[in-house]
Image (cartoon, rainbow, N blue to C red; front, top):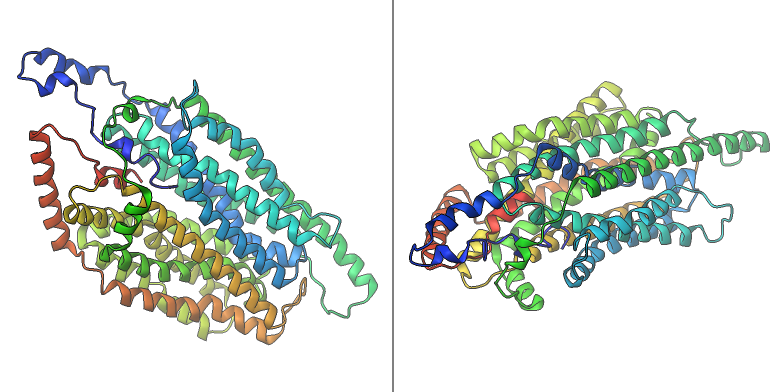
Length: 524
């Protein structure tokens, strides 16, 4: 639901005045109708786009830093940390369809239908986010503390992001205006990933990294380490405060600068399909299953790198004070190359972009696995990884519309399934993220990870190297093999486009309007 909620409201049903369906007696009324539609100003679009930053900023900070924070700063044992990470991500996956369902049943108010969710979830979300990065004095219930506030934050940020995603369909009744606003949004969201990585990494990187040179270190060394770890805890709290402030500012700008419009939903005439019937039809559509399977493996590969990169740089490569800069290099590279991949897939086709973009990380991952620690080589690999991350970020949302168009050609009388296509892709991706983080952290526990150690046993270093290099390579290769089974190539896509255009023209001539999946997908 996070990505598809409100899709039905974007259809053209009911947008044409009744006079256009009559015998041409009132041509003036038909011409006047478009003039009543208020165009979005640049200010409106910027205010809308800013609302996408909180989800990306907090998501990057948690994705890259939560694992090393739990292990080395909060001093949670690896087994408990694996439970926190897995349950938190799995719960995040479950909340998307749940919150989307609740929003679909909520009534309209003076503030709109979606805005109340954004307004009332924001203060609770920033409190929960801040408490994730707070180390309580008690040690016995730490696991429950982090599990509770991590799950609570994921629920509240979903209550913000799901209605925000659906708001795209309610800021204007004009497709061109929604597309333009979405272009602003995607730019801000990509910049938000860089901002989250930069703020968290640079603030935390300024503090002395807490570690104990030897597990049997003297009391004096442990006292000195305790002072150091207190500084690091305060640095994490400062970063959380800065990011929470950005969250609030963005929410205020969104609320004051965007007005939710009701017309597009009120005029929707198509009856919604029962959820479980639509789910059964979607899950039986072959191209969708093959596309999800391919991206599931490639997404798992990049999630393994994301979740373990800080520990890998700190202990395996020995770059304790450089990992935040390496993360910034990855995200900056991804930001710069997204437009290049957009041009590439338009010029050479989407399947070709998948093979070239995602496989481009493999040689560099092999290089890291075989070479000794080298900072320059690591920066080169970080930039190359960012190029592949950009392709992995862009391509799923570019290829899902083709699958939906293919589905509509095979099921021309079935409408309203777009939210299922998008929300279950998000669900599977988030659930896989929880599995990858849980298993990788658990494997560190089995190999003897030492909390707050300045160095780790050889087995731990080897495990981290495998989690960041060889395991992602294997997952990427499996994903690329699955993409060979994906049936929608450029020729098939052009055929589907022509067939859909013919169906739309036929529907338009008969006075009918159906849900436009391509419009929804381009907006997402």
